[in-house]
Image (cartoon, rainbow, N blue to C red; front, side, top):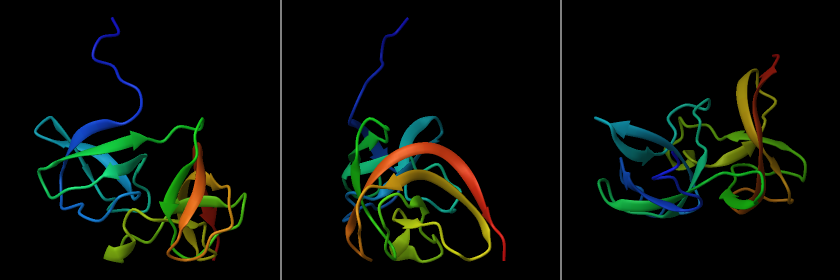
Length: 140
């Protein structure tokens, strides 16, 4: 039975202070079964929601699930060219949590989930289109 289903933007509790983080990517999780969103804490997190309206911890915010039928504008770290595979920015830098970046040349495993559809420079909003999630291994 398809009751209590939804499409598009929906409200959810902020699991942390998300003030000023509109357009950033967030992770849907829960505390004791109550849904909440947080900024990613690992570059392999499934940050598959865009924060539409922000708020303090415990406030109701709104998010949009990423869909390949739509493009989104998301803050980028570094820069990108159209067609670049995108992954999460380095979450060890607090200001970069929830941003995207082109897959770096540094050795490591990166989870890509989108492609850039515009040329964009550091700190701007890149136009992205969600794509299948895959892990890319960059050899050192």
